[in-house]
Amino acid sequence: MVRLDKNEISFPDPELYDGHEGLIAFGGDLSVERIWFAYQLGIFPWYNPGEEILWWSPDPRFVLYPDEIKISKSMRKILNRNVFSFSQNKNFREVIKNCQQSERKGQNGTWLSDELMNSFIQLHEYGLAKSIEVWQDGELVGGFYGLQIGNLFCGESMFAKVSNASKAGFIHFVESNKNNLELIDCQSHTDHLESLGARMIPKQEFLKILHENNERR
Image 1 (tube, rainbow, N blue to C red):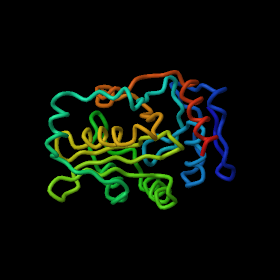
Image 2 (cartoon, helix red, strand yellow):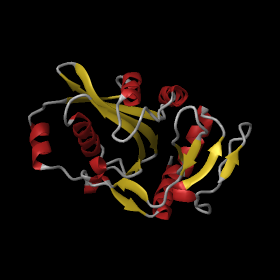
Image 3 (cartoon, one colour):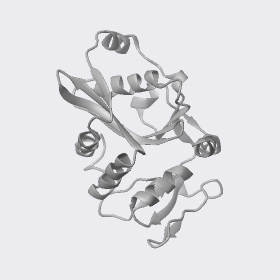
Image 4 (cartoon, rainbow, N blue to C red):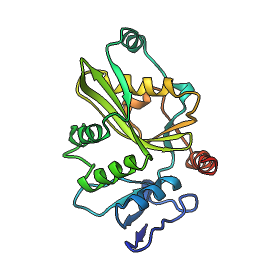
């Protein structure tokens, strides 16, 4: 595992370096420039606030191909009944704030620190991060955010205040962007996303798609 220098934005090559369970570096900072550079390499930060910043590039990688999304009969009924309405980039700050405050099963507190949250808000202001909002009766009840790299969307975190809100938002996002989305990076496994069709692929396969999207931008 490599210690990063705060004064130099660089990372070990994830194609050549495999750390323990995908952990390839620690340290550095959470500047907008470093985060954006990391994601273009297939690396993301994940750590406990107050502790050393940890940088990951797991193998295998948990992803979803848009044409493989699974929609249950019950979810299709909810979508057809227009229980929710959806928007994009209408309220990024509230989406990421709700993601920070959401309780996670098996976790004590949040991994999303104020510093990391503020960097993503800046990335949104630069047009690099986007949010998807889910509404019910005029209230924000769910959503998620992530970074867009060409036709690849790197999902970060989601929240739901009512049942099925985040799932409906994710399905709507995928179905609405099938023609211009090649892959959704889900990073690490969750049962929630697996039920929607996400699966593991080798890191090398993921990095190949990522590099092709970097070149097309």
